[in-house]
Length: 249
Length: 99
Image (cartoon, rainbow over all chains, first blue to last red; front, side, top):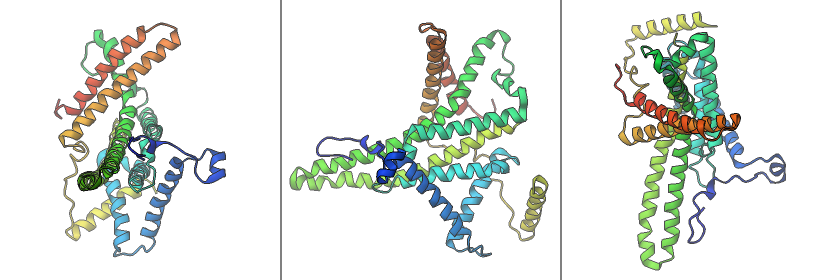
């Protein structure tokens, strides 16, 4: 958080041990703590949402059903009939990221999706899954994708490394996109919030002008709500697209 | 459980939907590709695609140099290849669907 007149926008992303001595011993920081919170929230949402199991759903159950259908349609429409097999994975991924993005918007909380270690781990999981599925479905024909059809053989030494690098850049771009969006949003929050603190030092005039950054921060919260769901959606839909390419014969 | 029961379930569901006049519209065909339609979002995505390919190229080149104890030859080659791969990524992102 911003302290005094200096702006420390990146301090909010620092990891500290939590839960006292036990956390200290286990090197347990906010990041895994909020991951656990996110997982528990998603599980509680589904469990308490679906517990009534009513034919005519209440609001909570309707929300859980909409969530289920939304991801299921996305998986089956994008990947094809084989997508049903990957639906649990995509559902988990989407709601884990969405919960992480939204928990980070609460004051005094921590956004675990703002660390490249977390997003890269998620992206590598997706990448390895798609490679394994490709190798299983297509066998060695998978490697033929690295040579564009119709290109002359003389260009192969140039084209194949470029295609391989383009393929390898997928998890990197997937992780950078989520991480950069979350970091940028939270840095902007901090910058505008520290403007308020700085302006408060200028007396009455400053108090009046401080309304500006506060209004901007309120608009930013709305924007971040949109960005949070959009980035989770983009992560999930790109996972679907990569898996579609993997299961295509 | 399995594919067959899944298929027969979706068939029965379809039949039930037809009976009750709840036919599904086919509007989701383009939803997969049209995830980021707005221009700033597209620009941001193109930027990350380019940067990430370059990062991967530099990382691979640096790693090969380290491995073969050469100085910068692989780094130079793979940085150029990574840049090309970034351009290729952006082209795949913005190209018209037919080509």
